[in-house]
Length: 246
Image (tube, rainbow, N blue to C red):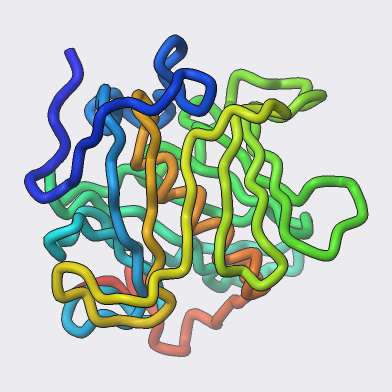
């Protein structure tokens, strides 16, 4: 049974089926993040006392934080015997937990590919989805999303298309024109969320909104050149979980 979204999320009657997922729900992370109505959220960075470092947070229309992104450090052991840490991102459910629901990790030795795992896992059995740049030559960021069940990756399960100026992006189901979510640069403050890089997020009915936020985190990392290559030595004072917190 679908659960209702946290208080403060705006529900609307479903749009026409051609632009949503009414007949085929999109559930990637968990069914509790999928509702029969449209869900409106906002995301922002640098929100005082709420977001972490330059990571984003997701809020309802009343300004209540739903998800936040934190830093997490994985141990790296190279063939040379050098030990260090590689930073990845974790998506934390503030409203329902708080629990870490997804770990977002750049794939080693790849350019612009990220994997999403359930919880803190890096085990293949806990892989949820992967994101990578589209192969075609492009002057704007287009990303292909592959679910863990899509082993061949011959056709993407979802596609993210971002505008040239990075002020909007749309997430489609596969290569179709069926939209599951949209994001637009927000000029006005809603619910007292004062921060940087504020966007409105419209998640269509029967679409996993935690999945949509996780995709936005990866998009931001790829836009800023984040690839998890930033390793630090063990004696530098960093420990697992450094950078986490409110």
